[in-house]
Figure 1 (cartoon, rainbow, N blue to C red):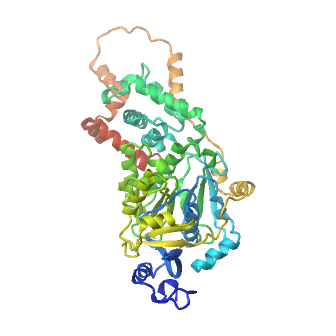
Figure 2: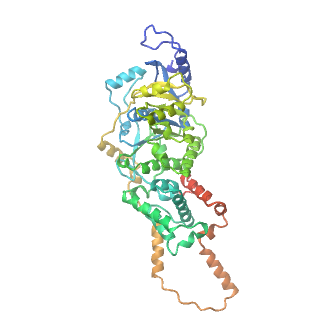
Figure 3: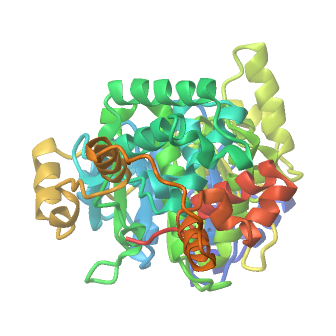
Length: 538
């Protein structure tokens, strides 16, 4: 008989002569008595006691309904991620984790038993066994310990890039127009120098006419974009863009023993660049959305993606950016991907996104200031009705304790349950840097992504074009003989072949839409860039 099938009226073990459990506890126990595969989170807390007979769990098929792990600093969010990631891996589900502080790498090594672990395991009736899990370690642009992760500028797209460069809405729309031109002309934007070359060309005497018919690019706006690119490069950001571009299908790998691979993106080397790494996480998710097929409801997720420091993604985000996030989260579930946002309070996540997060693990909140108290009241309102006084409970939870509500096997919210969480079985801390480097060097993926490649792209094409124009002799003054009808026809044909980008697309659906509304068209191109619907695949 499993914990979930235990008779609900039985008193908790170790409470001699205790009366039958109160009705609210029986209702909570019934709400988590799942029959199918599930992840074990911990045991119920009620009236100051831990009740190990009442196990709090998440049904495995519901992990692609997304979730939120929240709580103040130091309340145990990272260990909760580790606990969930371990069980997902053990059940054959790949996991992506962003390691902002550098303390998640321990998931690859067996944990160390000590008094605290033994005490916690006994309290929640956990059979604790030390275990490490199959891991791959990545680093943005190769900065830090990990296989380099890069993206091309083309695939990163104008909205994500605008977020990184901190452009306003007008500048973002102009950047979208630049991407549109580059796509039409076959100018590959692989790295930052490619983008700078295209912007410079479009503001030159030769290039100004290229965009004139569809809004143009003002010299002032181009100047802002170029200065932002220069400042971006000066901060050492160039290595993040280029080739070989990371193939996000690597995140969905399963190890030879059937366990899901845990992909850990090491971010300590770039934790002072929050706009960059949070936006890169969104690029990974958007790229997955593009590549993965529709699968509908599945017995277990194809991948669970933990989005740490989620508030950084939403800070100062444009409407187009927020709309893209909302659409990605709404639709990626049907591709078998679950997304968990990790942050301090639910108010860090926009309402349209929060409404789609069916699984909630809320660690303790602080209420030291008026703003804290306001955040606490807002958090309580996001939970279903509960027999708990949640304002009191959320401020009294200890480290490794949380208020939980998830989706049942039928998709309905479970009762709110204060929970003492299980202890992770892997190492609760970082592995030795030398061991981490060895793991990276021995990975079969390292040779695929280690060395950057700089092939011919927009910068080289425009530079060669400029050099050719400079070396060509000035044309002689033409005579003006009477032109025959056939030569006039040939001239028109040549002109057509050398037409501008506007003339090339004037008959297309893209141009007709753009003619109706420039803003609407740029929005569509931005969506294309994020979701990859017209991407050049690697």
